[in-house]
Length: 470
Image (cartoon, rainbow, N blue to C red; front, side, top):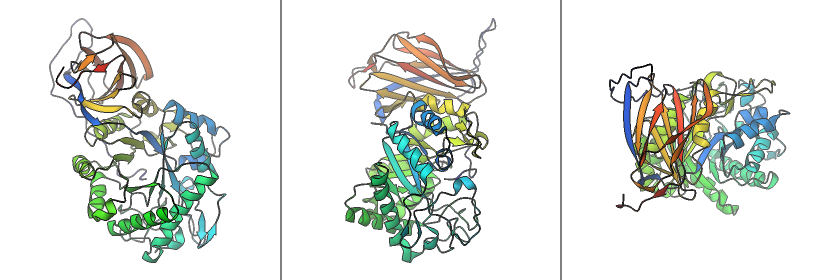
């Protein structure tokens, strides 16, 4: 996790300006575009879904008397079906705790062989509730090993941030710690963990002693050894959980880490995952995953843009360029600026308020559901998804520019379509507002995208023509 660090502000990828002045007070479009939606170009055959990390917000609001309200917003209204549970390391009690209070996630093994399975009650409550409300993908991850396994004696990082803080002699103990935690919580909390990852953002250089959160630099060689050890412990315990790697802060860091693994180690990894705080190698990482036949997730992203438009662009790019099978935001509850979906001060004040960014994510997560196909659309502002079971086409269009945009969508590749397009929009003045339907004209429709908006178009009763029969 990388809160308030390395913020990626995506540029507005504007089309070439087309001078178009409409008289009589009508909307003036300085941009026009057209795109064909093609269900025969399948980017992702079955989308896994949308998610959030539970740290640190669940560690806080999981203890509120109105915690159910937060759970309903995240896992019912937003429909998030992926959760990342943070296995805490637990700070050295002999050190002053420099971490911010919400980041002090307790560990389960405070010293060698001393376990406490009653700890971390708040985050565990939210995890159980998420699963009860429909979350069907659960990942466990660590930000740091327990303090007594580290070189610095602290879960905040090494002294310089660039050397491995996990002592080599404790690599097997750390792998055992992770597997034992997942095994016991599976029994105690009745939660099935689908995946386990060794450590979050392992090659980042900012996990330094005395920092404000848990973090641990672990280079590719040590990562690969941990993958082998975790696999051995899973097999010994009769567990079938998959292993995720490498969950680095940027695509290039993830690519470099995975590229350094031996083929035998990569074979032990079930799923490749990256964070996209910095976008620098989407196609390289996509191709690397493809040749290894591994699914690829974006398992963390966050930014400080309260409008949600930077995030919307990131989603559109991550799913169309990198072709990620899942997209996970850092944390849906926060009290800091534009980072949050659900505003909460996290200081004991249990009040909350969905932000504009909440509704921007909802424009995607409510309408593009797990199991959908992500399909081709040759228009730079758009993301298209097709639900084969429900025969429903969804297009989400992001206009993060300062001018209104008109887009003509062509649907000739579909055998048939419904007769009307439902329209839902989020902008500064429209939080997930349903608008008047648009009539289809032949196999296509024209959409108006106001400046600074995210609009979702849904066309029911849509079937796909056989390839070559358009």
